[in-house]
Length: 585
Ligand SMILES: [Zn+2]
Image (cartoon, rainbow, N blue to C red; front, side, top):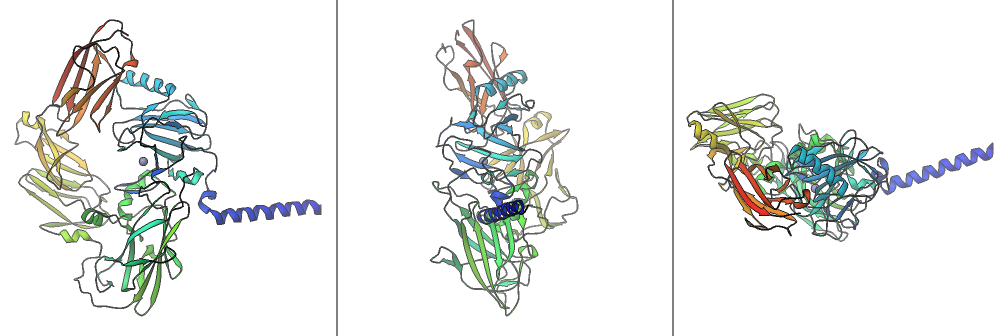
């Protein structure tokens, strides 16, 4: 009995010591996620071009971007056994993407693919021909397309919104669809390089706060210490302040500026703020615009991440907050503030900021609150819009309607309508919901109306098409982008240019038909290609305007064939191209 008890006791001790040890080594890795269950999705060492949770406009990067040696066509492998639960092909976004559901409760996602493995490719093409569409979304039945761990599922590519060849890879919780940092599953990436803190800022957070004799955003001066940590010059302040940094993480073997994993602030040794990019839901993505100083990004083109939480920010990534990370500086006291930036491997860079509480005269006239850079640009007539009310403005034939809770705070909203341009505030304000911009076009003829669209007027004066809907005598659009808009017309047809063949040729040796399509103002909306009257699948790559037909899709019995392509833009200007070619196989 005693012997048994001793054994149990030793097992308990051993387990306790071991888990303590793991706790010390890496809390996140051991806490929630299965280790060594998933393998790498590529059969090359993983080098990243982007980390999980990188701060982008309107969203966090939902996966990791894995470099593919600057080329397409690398083998993409199932990271564990499972079945293909979803296949999506879209012109932009993820391009060609596969979702694999695994028995352990997670789903892996592989995007920007060039081509699927033969068995998946055959299944997808059959559906594309049935639906006569390149863009498609499929949900294969459970276990109908099974994959073993390490089985080839696709070739890597550059489809969709991708701007260079890479694999975008995600791991999601299959039930909640929450995305989880793939590096927490033991998928290994070399990283012994510390994050870089490029600059640091102090935000005075009310009218009476002073920071170094000012009430506006203050950039700090700092120097690098021998141990690699940073030390800022003494800051004199009184009142409520918040901190912000510009920072990135570099991994080994790559030059890309990646995102941090964790950001913490300590005040006199006590943690005041932490956010961590472990997991989040797609629904909370827009709140990234409150973590980042959105107006500073708009005016100064640099991305400051705030180390304090502003009102109405519903992000789930925060922990251990004291007073939302806002530090109250009292006259006569001194503070040691430390900002710690970490990557997922635990490499850290620390910035120490000594703060002396000292009441000062404020040299600059107080603004509403520092960091409200939109006030720099306050001009013309503004309307005070409350966040919790429906707001609308009309002038002549223009109406702007803004739903409740579109803004994160009440704002002085600019609006004017002059020389046909509707100035709808400016892009410095993040929007949580779409507003509706409506132009009444009853003064135009019916024929003119058909070619009209709503254009965004960019800073450089260029026009860009905004998805325009039509109802009776009105054109309208739903968008989150504030700025300048006008009505414009498009009477120009798209162009269609054959790239690898000429009319009347024998094409027996060709593997593909390539045709470039282009439309200048509103862009290509529809394309339809047929050979001898039957629909053919042309894969459309909107970045290059290339349409590609794969001759292996169909065998030809007769020799002479007619190719017909019809392309329309957003306002239905339509171009038709017809060619004859010869091929007998
Ligand atoms: Zn990506």
